[in-house]
Picture 1 (cartoon, rainbow, N blue to C red):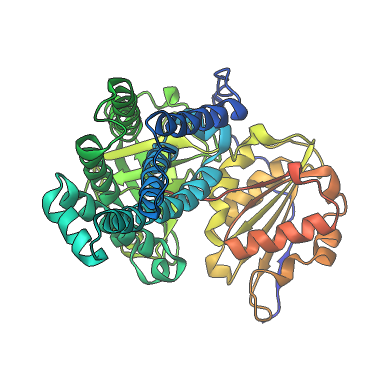
Picture 2: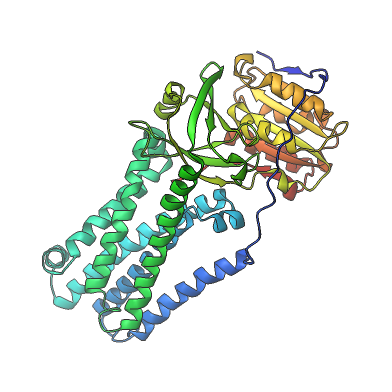
Length: 468
């Protein structure tokens, strides 16, 4: 089926109630480089303490050298695990500085590095001890596990880390339900706790140095406080203060529903159009895991609206939510807002359900003839969501909507956004900010086309969800 492009006529402006636009987030006086420096200085301290405790002494034998390597990989691996958890602690400061997409990517790769370092520690230490004792590697491994305090627990923790890494591989992720994957990752906290006990009990760097011991205890406490503060206390405080509850569920299209959440004093909730929360609906089987959904309408002080396509067990269950169901949220998160706009005109590109944050942001976009152009890609007209709202809103702004509907070629998402098409639809695209939200294949295709047309990277803004 060929693509269909529809350019609606402008509709009369509809009356809208005035909305309070939240102020820009207050800067907290710390730059990205400062945070990176803090992490780097602490890594340096870990290495320096290892050297101070004789890490490079007695390296005359092969066994001693392997044991020393095992010690440093354990220390660096443990520190990497703590940093990894900190990155995904939902800290609003880290999120504002870096954005959740980079934090999630760093968390992922740092997680694999952690597993490699911890496994290297196991191998090098075991082989080093075996050479020093004149024993076989299997016999030495059994001796360590059966006689050293907390060694069995540490082995269990290592096995958990390996299992988490294996389930994080892309091939495994595609075969696992999100809920299963999320549940497995919760064991990371148990693995870190077991590592702490092992480190305190047998760590040669800590046994005779109260300063080093206090330093590591402080690191663990800082991570625990961050997780509790941002992933437990803050969501409960926000949700109880505003008494968030499901107001109603409305079907928007086949397999797509909007959930309206009401509460008290919602005008005080510091959320902006384009941002998202992690939503936890307190039902019998939905309370223990949270999912990221963008606001699909700007906060108006009365309701928060999200719009969800049913693609899995959890999203299918949302259509059965009852009015009055309590809701717990984490957030708001995201830098995908109108605050990133630097140009007087904008291009919005949406694919499928990716229209939701862009629909919410329309109210804050510039007004004037041609100020807003929206390209909305959908597989069929049934998949077009909010058409009436989009036509009215874009018309009010003096803009235009292109609906690109149907299948074309092998890649449904890429071909309609070839450079030739973008140049034809938006001749002044180089002078616009571009906001993208949709499947990764669509976003990648659009970005390549934009770059080939000379759009500066600083004018290209993408949304991406990636959470644990």
